[in-house]
Image 1 (cartoon, rainbow over the protein chains, first blue to last red):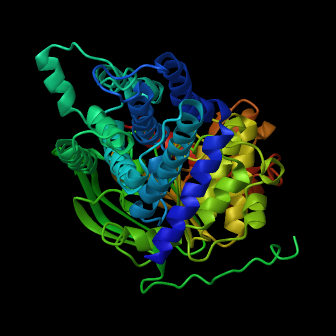
Image 2: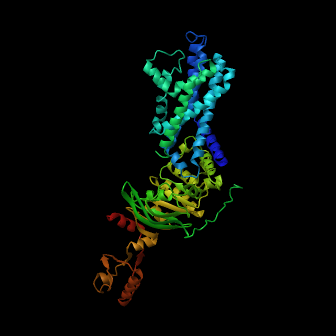
Image 3: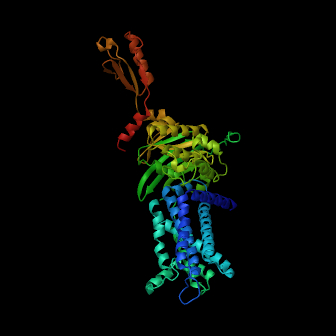
Length: 251
Length: 319
């Protein structure tokens, strides 16, 4: 067991090193959420949610936290595994005695590290630029929400990697499968509304809005997001089950 | 080099039957179609064994079974005394595998990747030693994606060797390479042999088999056609030894009769015969030359049958 953990840590270290070595990739992964945070955040300064005294930025910043978690866990991990499979790296791993758990574990640890860094950068910039910070009493809830979100979207990332058929389409498929949902979930626009009822119900069924609401609850007082937690739990289970069922070591 | 120049050689523990790979009656079917029809062969410790055959003969399928990636439909397989389908993890600690096409992670450097691979094994070889065996010391800090095809293949070898395995599988190690890249791959394989590794390689290149292998098995259409040393394989294929000499002028002019019991073809200045028993034919020829005062037969040449002839003959005939 300790050997598996040591091997996973070693694997994660190299993953992180090669992630940062590919400067444009790392920059894009970080710059995308942070740019959106600054640009759209600036447009929301001074506004309040209609009929309340909650500042727009107070719900917008945690929305971008959710966005960053999804980019790190779902987009990055999903496309990474698809590329590793397509390039035959997973097949090569199978020729060694490395336990599969240590390898996948290493990828997950590296994913968590990326998620933590994006989250920290987003929270810090959101606080410095817009004065939007979590409620001190909800710090633990915020951490819990981030962990749940990372686990949920990492499971979904592993699941989506199995339906991506080429290295070239890995990034585009991963982004295209969640960006539209993120947009209609109001992640980029705190005052977003006016969806037809059926579309609202659909959006509520996806885990993007659920994660955003769980994190927003740690920033501003809102109804306890019980259904959102159930939603994320179900998506985690479904993603993990699909990933386990469809996982292949070769393309 | 001080600490890494020491090369530890773990003696290969001979298994009960004394062979590194033991295959008997191996059968494999895919969706009702049988592709291996009872394959038998043995690979001894310390030898380079070549599974030679045209594309589609079943070489890779055989190798995948030995590597534990596929369970055979029938037959008996032992690799280093283990059942590959039942004990793949234990096998992989002691057997290195170079598959036909396998990628490397992007954005990693040569030495970094080999070092990572070394952590997967209980008794890894020293890094500097691995780099040296595959002749990649100069590019140790190069990013893997910048390597040439031949260098990448040698990096494959280094990764397969990282755990200091007793046995190395190489699946078509030089397919698609230019002559220079092939030459350097062969040099690396000969370095592996120098370390005392048992090597099982597949190829459809004759010159590769002839150059590298101690013993060869020719696999065609899911059957072993022939097995043995290069020389034995050629002989067992029933190929004749060729004996030739400069036609004596007396023979050409019809002043002496042709030798009895020899199917001699006089082709102008050269006389040629083919025989399955070179010693007997030579004795007859020399006795005939002595009797007719033809001297020692100028230009006498005895040519052993070549593997290439065997291979071409076998693969030309329909199965």
